[in-house]
Image (cartoon, rainbow, N blue to C red; front, side):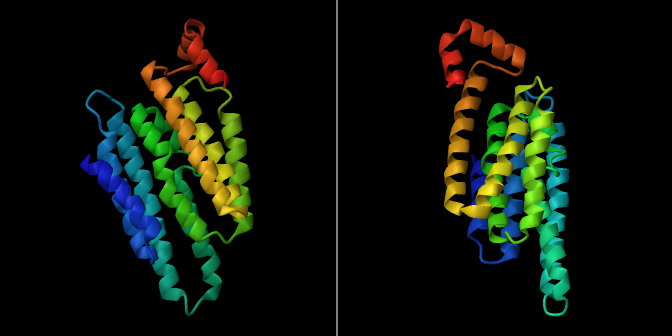
Length: 235
């Protein structure tokens, strides 16, 4: 409960801060709170997943603080460096939430998590990076490339997956592309889309967790034996 509270607190600190440094601190609190939640005694893959998560998030945080400090130091002297620093910052934030082409860590870590941690990583952990990107949404060309890459890679990569968690991971990458495209036009639309995305994930993961569906084969077996679940997935 303590780590879950600090997890939420870190997100709220990030999205409500007035300076980039305090936003970075909020992201760090959020990351360091999620890692203990990932470790579970009855899950042999959780320690590996938490270590991978820590390494990726730490590297992203390093680039974030580097770009923030570099921009603050050289802001008055080198206007030409502003755009590259913004791109580094946005790339690090995109890495934190697993957008393509910075998604290399995302499916593997999802595979080693429990269902509740999968839900947190797919939903709550996207809020802070997405809002910070909203504050710094300048380079439309860069984000167009990220959006297209997220949609294409998630589409192709999910074709041959049998693990439900990896399918959810690639689905999440695809939705990140749509969310970023929403940010380009209307932030209110993004909020509605994200809220609906969270609701669908909660419903879906609740079903998958309850019936212990880990693969496509498990899903087909459940669908053949339970008509109500078949109706739910049809809807």
